Amino acid sequence: MGDRAGRQGRGPIVGLVVAALVAAGCMAGGVDQGGPQQPAPPRSAQPESQTTRADGTTSVAEFKQDIEDAVRLAERYWAQQFRASGQRFTPIRRVVAYSREGEVACAGQALPRNNAVYCSAGDFIAYDVNWSVAAFRQIGDAFLFYLLGHEYAHGMQVRLGIRYNFTIQQELQADCMAGAYLGDSVRSGALELEDGDLEEFREGLLAVGDDPDQPWFAEGSHGTAEQRSDSFFRGYEKSLGACGLG
Picture 1: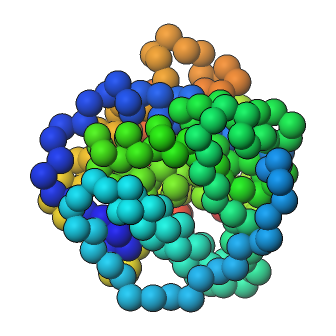
Picture 2: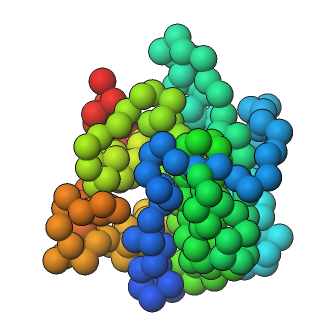
């Protein structure tokens, strides 16, 4: 799955790698925390380009291309949404990979391994590249588009001034917004899914839910597998109007 793709030939999702994926925490320190250790120049919105199709391999080069495609597609989508509502759009400042604990910090707090986060103070997305490549090879590229879409949605929540009292509310809305971004991109022709991609989304979401015994009001709660899947597919099927943005 590039800007328009899906990968065929993936087996069923194995939960061991995925289980840590979003449950590990995706807004380090909370909505208002974050900052890269070294400053970086602001990202610029990329010009629209021809969409591409992934070739079905699992190379590091393809992983990098899929990450770039997912970020570019998210920027394009949210720029269109902001323009349509008469608002100015500013893309997320940067997306940075890291490979060691403490290599990137969020508001002075070192980011752990096996994680992907959005930090609002620094306005950046960071992800553990080794862990992400392993998940990419095990699950498939469609899940990368969800992962980047979810983190990008947190950046849009900050831009829209959305802040809830409980983490789970913020996280389930981000799942819905990620679903809307992907569903709308498919409907517009900017993204093309192939056989198995929707099931990849579904099984991946089922694998990253909170433990059923975790209190919904606990800091860091993301929602049960069913709640996360329901939120994502509500956005996927009904667009942003189903995500409580109004």
